[in-house]
Length: 483
Ligand code: NAP
Image (cartoon, rainbow, N blue to C red; front, side, top):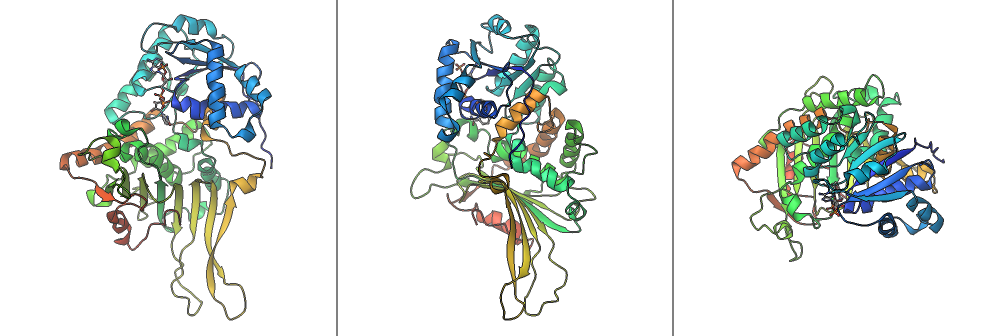
C-alpha cells in the first residue's frame, strides 16, 4: 500500500535552536524525509537560527552532517540531500537580546505560511514570542511551535501560557507532545471511532482494566541535571502517559476537529480522581553490576528524584467507574517498550470441560519498539485429541500492513507538516496542559512533604517489587516488559 502525499502550502519555517540536539536528530531529518516524498512545494524554505555566527553555506554543511548521522543511508542520495539543503537559510539571532531580528524579518516572505519552531530552552519561549510580536514578524496567521517540557508545575505552565497568549492566539500555538504524532496513537482513534466492533465494548462493563507502559532501557543519558530536577512524574506521566490515557478513555468527539478532540481529552483529565498515596509507587534504579546507579548518573548522592513511577488511576465517570487504569514508566528497565493494553473481562462461564479459567481478550496497542496492534484471543488448539484451548494473537504490524517499501513516518515529520497545514488536533491545548499539571502537582508535593525516598530497583528489572504488589493486591498482573 503506497501512502498518498499531498504537498502542503508554501512556507517559511524559522527553526530557533537549529544547531541543537533535537533539531539535528529529529526535526531536520524529519523535514528532509518530507522533502524526499514530495510533500514540500518548491517555494518551501527553512530558516535555521541560533546565536552561533555562520552563513547559509556553513549551516547547510552542518545539516548535511546531521543527515548523515541521523538518517538511514538507504534514505539518502546526493541529489535529494542537495535539493533539500537548497531550501535552507540561516540567520543568527540572540533570542534573549536584540541582535538579528531585523535580519530575520528581511529573510521572511509576506505571502507564505509562516511558522516559528522554538526548539530552545522553555525559559526563552515567552521572550521569543514577545520579540516576534513586537518586531512585527508574527502575522495573524503565523504559527508558533513549542517543545516540551511545558512547565515544571501548574504555576510555571500558566506563566508560559500567559507569555505565549500575550502575543499569539491559542489557535496559533502548537504545544508538541511527540507521542501524539505516532502512527499507532492516531490509529487508536481510528480503531475506536471508525469501527463498530470495539466501541460498544469500550467501557467498564466489558473492560477489566487498562495498562499503559512506557519502559526505557536507557538511564538519564547526559540529561542528569535536567532530569534530577524533574523526575518521571514530570518528564513522562504529566505529558505522554496522560495523553495516552486521554485517547484511550475519551468519549467520541462529535467531529474530528482539533477543538472537539481536545475538549474530550480535557474532560478525561478533569475526571481523574486525586491519586491515593497507596496507589502510587516511585522508584530509583540501582547500580547495575557494580556500575553507576541513578544517584551517580545525576551526580547527587542524596537524590530523591524518581526514575520510575507506577500508579493506579481512576477515571471517575459513567463509562469507567470500576475500571482502573494502571500507568507505569521508568528508566533502566528490562526492555524498551511502550504499549497500551486494554484487558477485557474474563468470559463469565465456560462450556469447555477441563480448561480451567478462561482469560479475557487483550487488545494491545504497541507504540515501541515497532508499532502495531494485537488482539489476544482464545481458539481451539489445532489437531486431534479432543477440544483443548490455546491463546493466539491476531497481529497487525504496521510495517507489514503498509508494505516493505513504506518507511514508517517519525512523529516529528507528521507534526511539523500538521503545523504548516494549520491542524492542531495532535497538539496539546493550553487548558489541557494546565489540567494535567493540576492533577500531578499534589502527588509531587506529597512526596516532597513526606521526605520519603523512592524504592530502589535493579537496572534491567521491571521496576520495584512494590509496583508488582500494586496490581497483585487487586488480583491482577502487569504484562511482562519485553515479554
Ligand atoms: P540544545 O542541544 O541545548 O540546543 C539548544 C539550541 O538553542 C542551540 O541551537 C543553541 O544554539 C540555541 N540557543 C540557546 N540559547 C539561545 C539564545 N539565547 N538565542 C538563540 N538561540 C539559542 O537543546 P535541545 O536538546 O536541542 O532541546 C531544545 C528544546 O527541545 C528544549 O526545550 C528541550 O527541552 C526540548 N526537547 C529536546 C529533546 C531532545 O531529545 N534533545 C526531546 C524533547 C524535547 P546557540 O548556542 O548557537 O545559540
